[in-house]
Image (cartoon, rainbow, N blue to C red; front, top):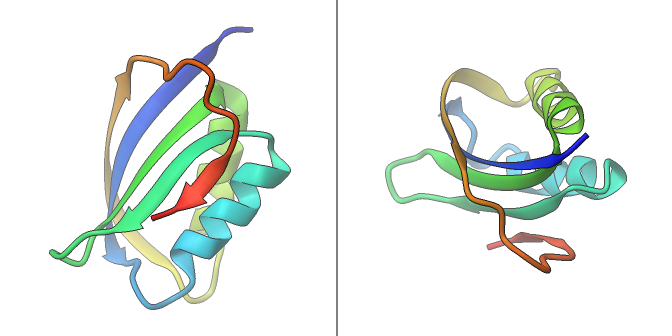
Length: 90
């Protein structure tokens, strides 16, 4: 299976609820790379790279949290980032 990279903007109750750190924990445990950051408009942006099935597991994990409430996501597939080796919170 080949890797993909997704750019996802999360809308809902996603700031101030540990979203970025849960995303980092899940991404590292699934051996995914990328980054996550809060935006000024109250959304959270995530770029994640790895196998699609593992990215889907990350999304399921984020959606099953009692503090996080994802109302919708804007997602698109983007080009891979070569030699990326970690996942960071920005």
